Image 1: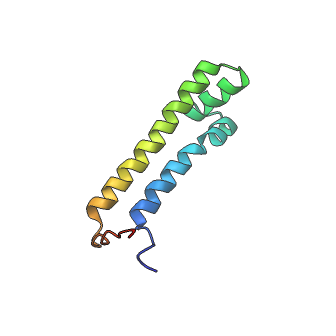
Image 2: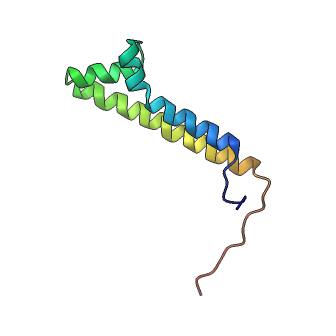
Length: 88
């Protein structure tokens, strides 16, 4: 089923998005400054406005990255579009 297989570009970009979600664990363990460390400190200090804002920014980043990947894949996909099907 080669039609169902995503391109390597899509796999690489989506993996990058998922890797950014794991930054909380890495930055907390290694004491690196960053969004994950900020999020970890906000959790332990119960700073809800900072927690909500950081989660919102990370979620928007993830959604924007997926949108960019989907648009780029649709623009560069050499396969023709499938014909529209009717429900009748």
